[in-house]
Length: 134
Image (cartoon, rainbow, N blue to C red; front, top):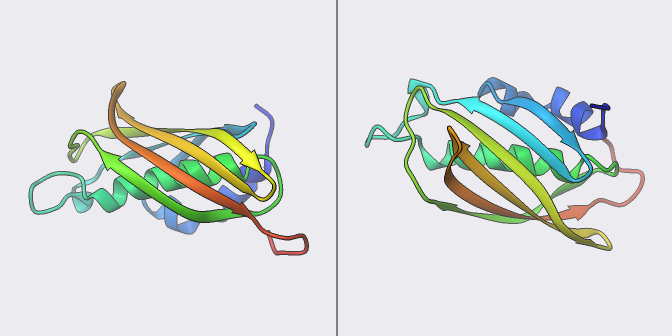
């Protein structure tokens, strides 16, 4: 797969890397990332804290919307948690561009564990004007 601006952005993403998130693919408004849930990521119910699931989905979203080129950031996002996960689970997030219009875009991200959908995320993006740092 060809290297995209999303790969360059991810190389500088210390937050995602600190959680062990891996970029598997990015290009053409799509991206796939994965993360191993560690014991430090679980809440008081022994389930993966929702913030970590959100961050995984948000990372896939960021990589998808930055795969085209200009610096693009989140304008908003929401997530629906469908199934709990726990320490030892490997989560994979698949992001797909749905529509772009001008500087705005909508992206859907599906988070899975072993092929089973555990969360659905929708992100709204905004491309920054020219001359912004990458």
